[in-house]
Length: 285
Image (cartoon, rainbow, N blue to C red):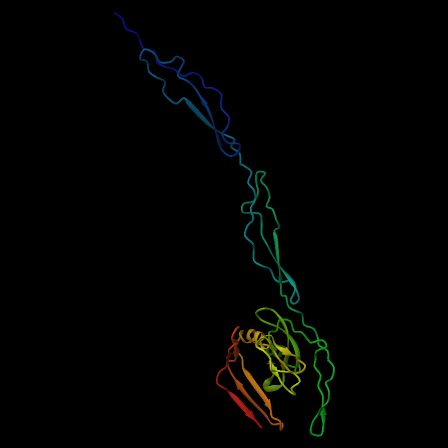
């Protein structure tokens, strides 16, 4: 009697390594083999283990393109008045370029305008007015408006007076606090401690005050004579801080009277509502 002895399978040799599955970074190569040397037969065992072999390949970094970091803080304005420039910077570091990657595109310096206000400039006297007849004397006036002195970022006459207490009553240029607009205003630097911004001046009827609402919103007249400053400008000026309102009246016989109200402000368009507190001072002769 006899019986056949089964033949166990054996692996063939490994084939060649295939192409790496990545062109950069860590990839993988594969190779294969077959259970064919010999193949299993007559009930012999199959090959044990895997018919696929792997290994790492191209263990090199891929190119990394640079990216900008966030902007830094704005630097100090390079001018204290007039149009200056502020700068800020950023770096190509989030991440930086490496392994042949591209650098960041664009500038590493950002700029913006700053301190867009006029620098202070000295005023010059304008023409004398006509003579006004008085009791035994004649008077005439002139304004410091040729040119008008400009005081940069001062928002009203009180700020000018605090910074320059010796300045006389005259016409000055201010810069509004919110819209940074330039405006010529009459500053009373003598009455009740000085620093008053005059928003209405009527003397002899040379300017017609019977006007429509848009005229009162924009303002009319001339700072060197009779005028109304304008509701739009008055709203911006009185909305920044607390204010006092002083009304001065001269009677036909020369007598003077005044009244002072605290908490004065003009509300916003379209109504421009007048707000005042209870009068704190008054007098006359």
